[in-house]
Image: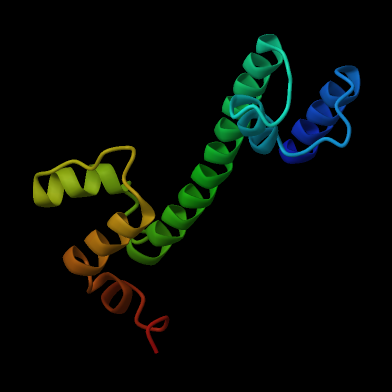
Length: 128
């Protein structure tokens, strides 16, 4: 199921029920209402605010999955030979822990700086 299609359908249905036509984006509709360029009720504004929060959560979830997938690829490149996870590896080998909210870029930098030999030493055929 495509989350954005479902959310778009919910928004379009809400627009039909509230007789808002043409239906602009939720961001534009709320902004226009707050700046007096269109007239909708406070209840409708509150609904839009909640809808925007749900949309933002869906976007965060989608982005987090992308980050997790990229981090998993890093693990395959740098840690597959070791079988420990990044958290366990950095604690045991370097004495510090990484937070769950570490970004892909940050984790990649740590791997490049602290375990640069992993790609060539443990996977000599891959590095050629």
